[in-house]
Amino acid sequence: MKKLAIFIFVFFFFISLGIYFSKDYKYRDYAIEKKSDERKSYRVNLNLGEWEDFDTLPGIGPQLAKEIVNDRNVNGRFTSKEDIKRVKGIGQKKYDLISEYLGS
Image 1 (cartoon, one colour):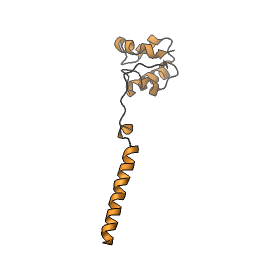
Image 2 (cartoon, one colour):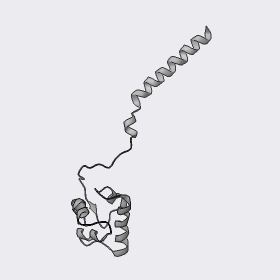
Image 3 (cartoon, one colour):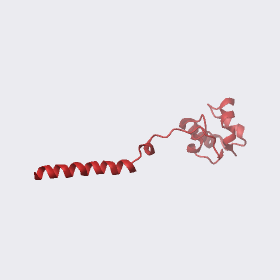
Image 4 (spheres, helix red, strand yellow):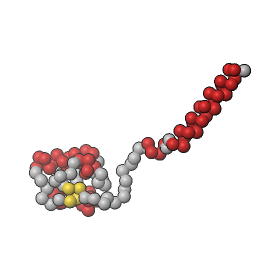
């Protein structure tokens, strides 16, 4: 009889814990975030931006973002927004996609 009471107590204890944590634990908070297609409300400075900043732009991945920063370090500052087209991988189409997010 004593073992049955302990079993019932332990059983309901774990059920109670499950109910308690299921209310507070939200699985969607830990989902992998995808890049948003929403319009950005800020501009990335061509001459001060880090690769992480360029990576947030549409059509620019981490590798191309690092190439932008590397080109700036090797060839000097960008004098205009159009100068970003000197980076291999950024043509007119990609430039048209990101030009509104670029500042100098």
